[in-house]
Length: 197
Image 1 (cartoon, rainbow, N blue to C red):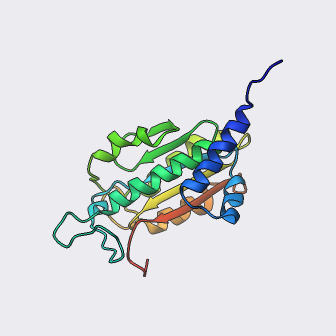
Image 2: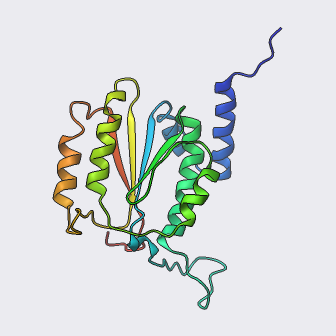
Image 3: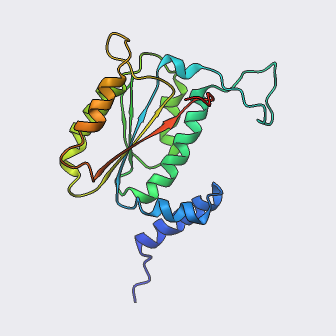
């Protein structure tokens, strides 16, 4: 008799453990399950502005005289949670692209992020160029698996000259997902404490 455990069962047990660990409600857990089998990609803003301190008066153990956490620190925490969850949903692991450094591909464990996130963010915000690159890179795979791109940023995209590139980003979002717009999903994670953003 073969008593081997089904890999899918192991994956679902890990998913359940993470849902409890991160205190995710059941409704949201069901929504996350709809991402099973997706190719999941993150585009991470590692521009200089990510060094901006974040001030949350409700944060425990925060001293007015100590080092304040930055947007980069908060993003590191968020990305580690996304990697944990995505590893149970994306069979290849999550691909993480940075605006100003080399990507991390097939990431299954948040420990794989430590070295990259230990380097301070520095540089411009060329989201448009990188999103276009990722779409071109992944486009040939969207017939096999749907693609989810999470863009974590604190600011306005810029071009190579540091000028506002919102129009360029809009064009990429509108036109470069064709002909597979129903299989390519893009969402933004705002890395800011500015409630007006």
